[in-house]
Length: 242
Image 1 (cartoon, helix red, strand yellow):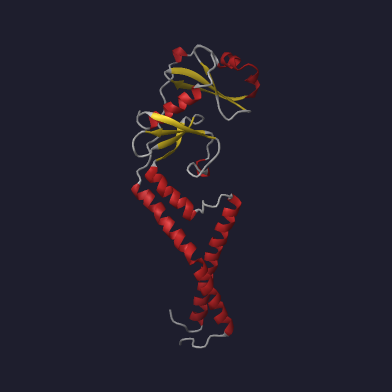
Image 2 (tube, rainbow, N blue to C red):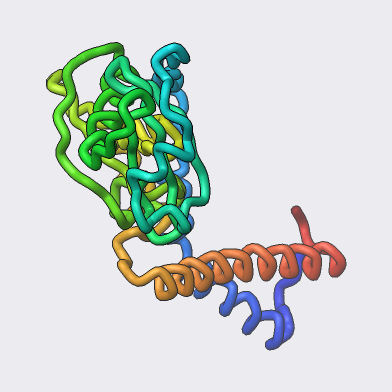
C-alpha cells in the first residue's frame, strides 16, 4: 500500500533530505570525478623506475677512520648523530649527520678533507642514475612542501632535478636516504594536480581550514545517505514499495 498522506514530520524530514541532497550533490560529483582521475592515473601511468643503488665502495681507498675524519669538523664533533660511508664520484666519502643541521656534512674517507659541495654532486648522481644515466639540471632546493612536492612524500630537504627530455620529467632527491623520493612529468603532474585540487581541496592554502571544509562536506554527504536510509526504512515498514 502506498503512503498517500504521510505525516507532517515525515514530510519535513523528506524535505530536509532533499535540500541536503541538492546542497551536497556537487561535492559528491567532484569527489567521484576526481576519484576516477586517480584510477586513470593508476591505469595509464607506468610506475617510476625502481631506486638504483650507488656504486660499491672500494674499501682499499678508505684509509681514514670515522674518528679521524670527524676531526675535520672541528668543534662540531659533539653534535654528530650518524655516519654513513657513500661512494660519490668514484671516491669514498663519510656522510656525517648532526643535530643542528638537516643536511649532512662530507669528509673524504681517503684524504680526510671536508667538502660542503659534495652533497649536491651526490644528489645529481642519484638523479641521473635513477633516470638511466641521462643528463639532469638542478632547478630547486626544497626545505618546505609545495603543491607539487606535497606532505605525503614526507622527506625534506630535497633537491629537484629536471631532465631535458621534452616531457618535463623531474625528480626529487634526498641525499639522506640516497634515493629519489618523487618522480613526475608534465602529464603525470596535471592528473595529480587535478586530483589534489578537487579531491583534497588543495586550493585552500590553510591546512586547518581545508580539513574543516573536507569534514563538513564529507559529514554532509554522510547525513544525506543516512537520512535516505531512514526514509526508506520508514516507508518500507509502513507498507511502501521499493
